[in-house]
Amino acid sequence: MDRIEFEMNISLRDVRGLMIRRLCTSRIVRIYYIAVIIVSFLVLIAISDTHDRSDYENLIMFITIALIFPFALGLGFASAALKISKREGKKIFFLDRQGFGSRTDTYEVYFKWERFDFIDETEKYIFIKKNRRPHITIYKHILPYETVSSIKKIIAEVPVPNKKLLPDERDKLSNHS
Image 1 (cartoon, rainbow, N blue to C red):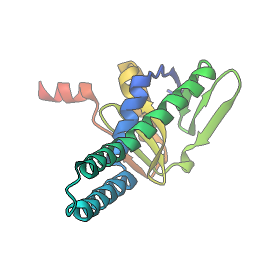
Image 2 (cartoon, rainbow, N blue to C red):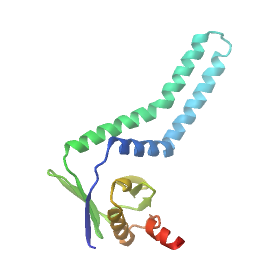
Image 3 (tube, helix red, strand yellow):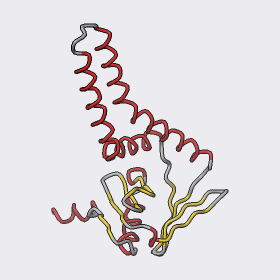
Image 4 (tube, rainbow, N blue to C red):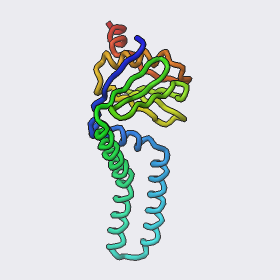
């Protein structure tokens, strides 16, 4: 198999799930939450001498908004990205032993594997990364098993230095019988 082509009909739910996963594992979001906790604690100390209930209500409102803000922002970006993607029309993804790309009626993009430094597979996704940041995401759960299997076979042979691929589900089942 030299080349595989596939279409991913990504829904808003798929994009939101990925965005929430990325936010929950993001170092910058963790630092943000630590800062929110520290600021909240300092404000709590500052208002502890006052017995005005509105100060505490304002603090609770600040904490609530601060905790929700990254997720709301991320989901907003995800929705906007999906709308832009839908406007581009049908997008076909393709990969071979030389690289990975996509095309629509208006453009075609192709990246050589040498551009990437890490491929990481999870239960739902295959992340193709540059500088450890996801550059391309393959949504495994919306593709047929045979397509995912073919993608993994090609990826296993490409010159990307770091790869973490999960064992094939059917291989795991046959090993247990």
